[in-house]
Length: 377
Ligand SMILES: Nc1nc2c(ncn2[C@@H]2O[C@H](COP(=O)(O)OP(=O)(O)O)[C@@H](O)[C@H]2O)c(=O)[nH]1
Ligand SMILES: [Mg+2]
Ligand SMILES: [Zn+2]
Image (cartoon, rainbow, N blue to C red; front, side, top):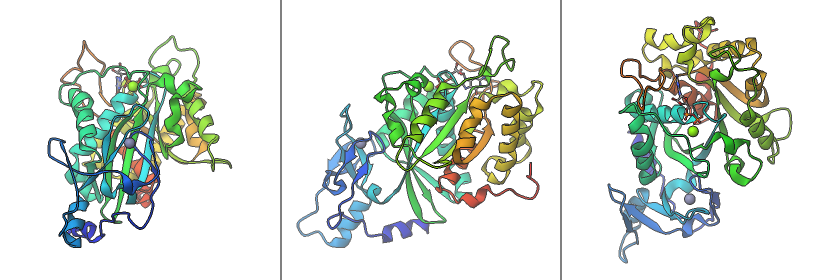
């Protein structure tokens, strides 16, 4: 009974200690967590304010608090939203999705989050439980992005430049270690990542990075008219992160998963490696949850990029203290009209890079990344 364990932690009402934190959703600086208003949320997201009854015993109050929320006033845009009341005790991880405009960031993240939530039973086998952090925000993301894409095969619109907002946030519980994490994701327009102004402010809060490599930008790979490789988004982000306090020294203290996206376009090309990895999950059930092959895949993906003189894209792997490299496809096909073709449409290896990043960020046990006997590459 993993659940009983959580309820044993007395839901702290924070009265005796002051918790200061950055909201993972709007980046608002919350100076005193326990002063934010308490509420219950109904199934359809309606707020009912929560107050302790005059004769209510400590036990009953603690039980009600365990499922309660606190209302954050919202950041600059000022839209209030909810965080679980126990959030002040969670380990917090902010994931930034980095890559040029059109690299495939938005499709990849939607595929990752969609598959993460669909895989409840399988994820339990590696000790993970995934729930939304804020129901309303999560449902909005599912309804506007993930479901049109995964259930109706719709192409996703370009991410608006003005919206520097977080995409979704999940409560990820490591059942084996008994630790809850709040993992939030920022997917912003590629141009924003390259700009020097304040628009990439969220970079000040990221703890883990998902770098998305666009293979259509590799010279002579999928197109003839691509002269040289550069990825300003990667460079910009790495140099901004290097300016963060505590980020001096040889390596940046952030884990990074580097994903060669749109790998379906490389499957039948001259290079055998992308196809080899893409087809593996068809051969082994649940290969995607087995992180012992990550080291082998990483060295193959590194060799693949290095052989293409794609140094710009290897920089995250060279600069960050922990990194893995992957091949993945969010659509397995090109858009045809406003939809992806029914026969080809599926997601390939989208969970593995995310699980790998979670393992590097110690949400999952990072020892899962140790190579197995038959996966030495
Ligand atoms: N073939 C293929 N195309 C993809 C894949 N993922 C995204 N795309 C295409 O790449 C383009 C840019 O995708 P998007 O996710 O919006 O990129 P972003 O600007 O980095 O967020 C769109 O036209 C998608 O149809 C994929 O896995 N395979
Ligand atoms: Mg986008
Ligand atoms: Zn907030």
